[in-house]
Length: 305
Image 1 (cartoon, rainbow, N blue to C red):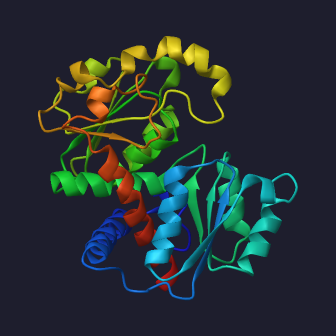
Image 2 (cartoon, helix red, strand yellow):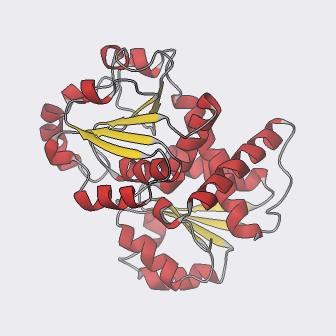
Image 3 (cartoon, rainbow, N blue to C red):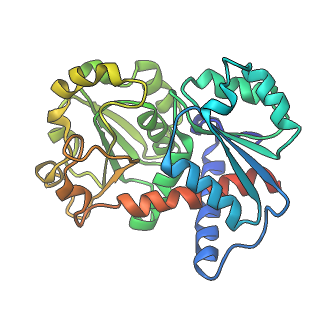
């Protein structure tokens, strides 16, 4: 594994190995601290989009493993504007051991990887969010003890997070169902690619009605209705998405022990209610912590092999 750009790039074996490594590193951290596996290593954190979890999880992950990470704001580089993506990749390759980039356009991630001589990690793009999906399935493993045969239902806007979850679910033997308004569904190309990754027992279902989708769900997942960069659509989206709110009435149709996930930040009262986010089925905050442990696995895999 030279870069970490998309769940689609990983074999099921590679994905499972990352999850196993994340579990090992989390247990080690809780037992007194991680070994300094990344001592002397450096990570540049390049941000076009802001984030609480992405920045802190990668930065503290490097610190816990003995390495060093530093943040570069959008104003410092203006990647793709003030300086070309290719030149940023070439310059940073001479300074650091790896680059994590959180960008608007996925093409910027691909271009960084093309011109970089050090590993590139996708911290989010408009196409996918692979680091988030890894943390999500780490959380599922901890709560359910397995991924095979579980039913995950994504409710809301079929965005970059939904795409990564689809790919991960198929590679890990889960049943992936998605309920969206028709205009905001995954593209047929995404669904077809996901089905190509299907391992034993994995299948995909598409719904318009979330109440039907969540029947017998083991996991219900949601995200904001209006992502960064879509602010001009917010008023229209607020008219369309209320039937897709994850509330107590909806989760009552799932299995009693279902867990509710959200990549955060949450717009409470929109896609999820306080009652659910803070309720007994919620795994939102263990999920958020697991970003750091999943990130550690990515960093160790890329920087010690």
